[in-house]
Length: 308
Image 1 (cartoon, helix red, strand yellow):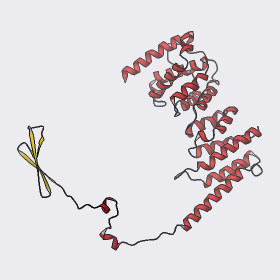
Image 2 (tube, rainbow, N blue to C red):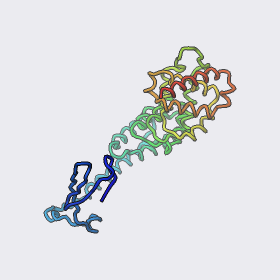
Image 3 (cartoon, rainbow, N blue to C red):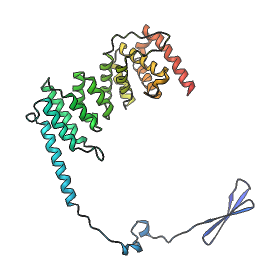
Image 4 (cartoon, one colour):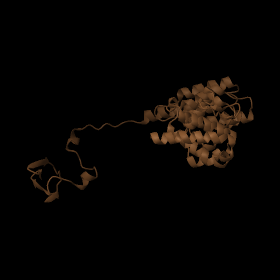
């Protein structure tokens, strides 16, 4: 058999017993191979191993393990009911104690027991709606930080957090929960930005952070949230022009300063800038305050693209 060769026009290949011979120029290369007998049983993994006769078969009794697992589940369900029982958790301190006992029995190493925490957060949302003064803040922080809880499964709780404007609990939710809905992300962004005094954009030559350190950390938490661009762009339309200008200026600051690139990735910053420009293009174009900022933004984006 003849094959094309890089050095010569053709290369010859031949087999001899369990060896393949390949000629390359003035050399012959030998490759050993083996072709064991094949069968349908072997292909299906049903071929009996000759050594299996010497093996010892051990029968495992799973009943004790199953019984212990059922006992643990029963304990968790009992503690969950106690935490959700208004009579046994009348005060915030009693509720916090019940939550502490429940969290002590849950497991985060193998399979997170978030199935016990989701109904607990939903219960808190309903109770807070009925009892306006009930808000066990530290207990809620401990629950959310305990394991990864899906935000889409307890959006009622997030709505209550937003209504109460508790930035601490909200920040913890954004950091630890997965699948945070885009409308919650934008509402959180509005809540944080509205704590910023004034919407005057800084058009100085020097690049300065327009936000204080605490507010910047909160905004960074939002910028790093996983989200769908299409849904986020639609939700961003609910921001007013003042909020957009402050956010664009902060994104311009992040994009311009080297020390912030580890805090929020450049790609993430650019994505947010594009989404804001798409959502508020007309308002930004006709805004006198935005003109200088957009020119500065254009310059720094050009520099970033050239660098990449």
